[in-house]
Every structure is written in C-alpha cells, then in structure tokens.
Image (cartoon, rainbow, N blue to C red; front, side):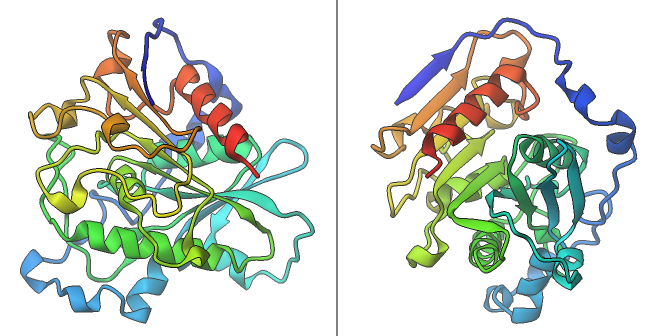
Amino acid sequence: MKIIITFLLLVFLGSSAFSEDYYSKFYSDFNNYNKTFTQKIDMNESEFRDPKELSLPWLNALVRMPKANGEISRGKMKDFLNSNKTHNTKYKTIIYLHGCSGIWSGSAKRIDFFAKNGYAVIAPASMARKKYAQSCDTTISKGGLYRSVLKIRLIDAEHAVTQAKKLDWVDKNNVFLVGHSEGGITTARYNPESKIASVTARVIEGWTCNAGWDEYRGVNSPFNEPILSIVAKYDPWFQADYLKGDCGQFINENKFSKSVVIEDDPILSKKHGIMHDPKVRKITLEFLKKVTK
C-alpha cells in the first residue's frame, strides 16, 4: 500500500520533553567525525563475523529504557550487562539502526523519543568495530563509498536481534527493527534465515528501496512481517534517477504494511531525516501500536 501524505507546515515543539543542552553536548566516538576508518583495500569480508568484531557494536550499543515516572534511563549495553539489577518488566523493544554517518545527536533524539513512548531501545554501534570503512560523505550527500558495508550492517542487525531476545527485560514477542538512511536500507534488506532472528515489524525512514546495486534494491521479508516505510519525495540523497521512488512497489502484502511519501510540505519533502516531525512520529507510533502482539 502506498500513501501520499500532504503535510501542513508545522513548528515542532515536542522536543521540549528533553533537554536540548543534552543533545547539543552529545558525543560519540562512532561517527564520521570521530572514527578512524579502515581503508577499503584492508577490509576483508571473511572477517565480518569475527566474534571480537561482532561483539563491539553490541557492547557499545546505546540503550534507552522507559521509567515508571515518564523519564528514561540512558546507558550503553556493556553497562546494563555488567549491572546486577534484575528487571520485573518486559519491554517492547526497538533495535535501532543508525545511518551511514554513525551515531550522532539525531540518533539520540530518535531513540529517546521511542523510549519516552514506552519502548526499550537498543542501538548497535556498527562503527565500534575495529575495522570499518567509510561508506558515505554527509557533507555532499554522497553514499556508496563502500559497497560491502551493507553486509556488515545486516550481520550487526541480526546479532543485535538475537542477543536482545536473551535479555530478561525484552519482550521477545515484540521486537521491532527501525532504521534511518543506511540503517533503513539494512532494515529493508534484513533477511534472517532463522525465526529466532525474526522481528515483529519494521520501520524504514529515509530510504526509497531503489538502487543501482541489486543487493540494496527492494525489500526482504521472509516472515511477511508488517513494514512501514516513510520517505520525503525530494530527499536530496536520492535524486539520481536510479534512486528515486519509494518502497511501495516492493513492500509485502501484509495488511498493515504501507509506504508513506511526504510530497507537498515545502520543507519536509526535501529532508533526509524526517522523524522529528510530529505527524511522522504520530504515523510511526500508530503503526507500532497496531502491530504489537
């Protein structure tokens, strides 16, 4: 199902729930600005599943957990794993996949938003790997610098899902995959062979499902889980002819699956990141509520 949404121009005030000072000072080692990248010639696909490499995105994953008083707790997975605290509550859990630029303040705002709405969130940091090649240049909106990055991202996503389901505070029946940009590509192409690594539903932000490389194109959904795709029609990253479009033509036939294209809003229709918008957030939360088991 494809839906064209006409948006009124809105001023977003909802972020007042969180301190802007926190986001302005947010720091991560795992992004394009702070990561020392591996040269492509030194990358070896046979090492992508090396146990030590595989453990790093998981241990350095950002974790958000809702509190009873409406606040959220923040930390890294390694801190939660080292804690002796037991949890009596099982949370609906989102595995959040960052974009090609890594983890930045926009990532923190997204995962905090979901946590504020009752979801535990785990955001694996793929750039925590010791060997990782740069895949995009955000200063000129150019991706595709390292084609095999998708293989890494898919491996990290599957590892995060399977490890999350082992945690005592994760509701194994309600694990969702949400990704933006390159994380959205990973979310669309996620194709676990085992039901153990399956997810309840997926949300794709900022990706068209159209690509010049076959392994990047389309949607995999071996278990026909519900999929929500949201993209701006004039997203500056996807104006080449082979990238234009939306995921609607590829999406599965699950009754809850749909592709939303932001077309008429003069500002939002030209954005790459759109999850800050109140209507996009409303669509996303309503979708997650409908597909929760």
